[in-house]
Amino acid sequence: METPKTIPEVRDRIDTIDDTILELLKERLSCAKMIGQLKNETNRAKWDPQRELEIYQRLREKNQDFFPHKALYSIFHEIITTCRLSQRKTSVAYLGPEATFTHQAGVKYFGQTAKYQPFESIIEIFQEVDKERVDYGIVPVENSIEGAVTSCLDSFLNYNVQICGEIQLPISHNLVCRSGNMEDIKTVASHAQPLAQCREWLRKNMPDIPTLPVFSTGAAAQMAANNPNVGAIASSLSATTYNLQVVVKGIEDYQGNTTRFLVLGRKSPQKSGADKTSILVGLINRPGALNEILTILSAKNIDLAKIESRPTKGKLWKYLFFIDMVGHMEDPVISEACTILQQICAYYEWLGSYPRSGEMESKGTDR
Image 1 (cartoon, rainbow, N blue to C red):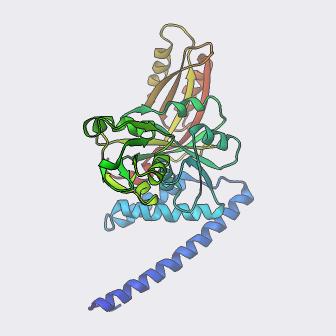
Image 2: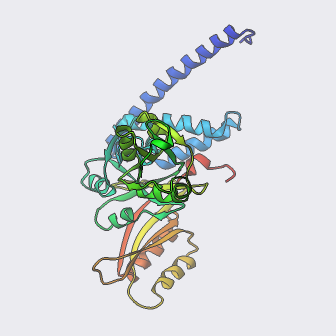
């Protein structure tokens, strides 16, 4: 093919390429629907994380860093999730209203084409998944600055759900209001976590302005949209969604602020090769009980990603421990260790095995 020499010729070539891409996308969607029909006939799970990981790895190798890697991942992530969701529309419960960080995490994980349903509390999301009124739920579980979201951890005791995935979302907080003028703000509203993550900035810059904890950053943005004297700590997406002006960007006290979200469902996915396993255990009240568990995991050479304690309510043991291990329950060492823990712990529950956050995006890259 002769190389185009003028701008109109190059633009014509781009139009031809775009038309080809569109036809191939339509063909890929048809293939995905065919796969869904075949999976229905064999009663196989719709989501195969190992297959998706293999696709990303193959594309990265073929790309050889010609096309920017993060952009390539983002493009194919949307294509893959759209094709997967074409097999059956997926419903996702999230901590609403629209444009919260939880909503953003859901879109990052499931893409734009899932059916998103907002709820006012983390408990409601657990309930919706437990009662199978939605396919999945998205809940925040911990923040790199403020630590664990305790209502999420406690809910695992009361509802029959499993962890199917995780998302890590960089968090940047903005002070927003209707006018864009700080002088108009008489109250600052937000979720308790963002208020805590911005407490030093608020103390230095708005020392006489009271804060109001509400159930989500989206709800705070809605309040600001309805009241000219309310400022909200919210995302840039919230400002756009509710027609607010950004007063000050990035008011969080520490850089590197990241929140980890969990994807809740009824059944954990198959092994991907880059997984994490979460369990919940209660210890018998005797000296050295926690050390005994850690020794068992260490002897199996199991890498712990997290351990978090929570006081119990009206139980024989005093604390429950949430433990995240690197690996899948199908891995022999994880399975063997968990079998031992079942025998020696006063309480044991497998919360799920799932692909680690960012593995599909960063697999094969310098980290």
